[in-house]
Image (cartoon, rainbow, N blue to C red; front, side, top):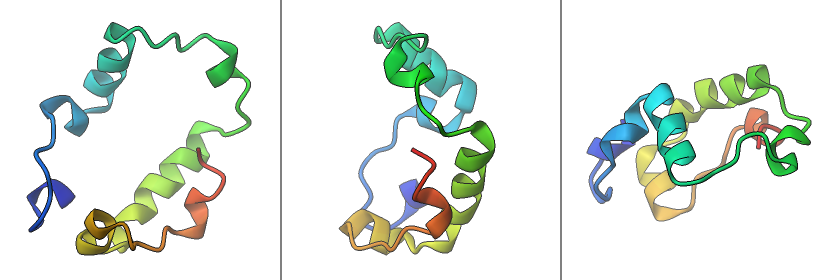
Length: 77
């Protein structure tokens, strides 16, 4: 939704779909099985909780870099 906000840059098509987003990173050479990713302690539930709370942050704040991220995002990434 922030892609449509005033001041937003152009969002890539694959950024709107989880499967396409993952495929894009794999195509770019990201090795999802590397220890960089498999050694993280975050679980998908934490990430989902953060993603669910992000709409509570105003798009204008996100675009300006002044957004206060929800506490649920602190441990998600």
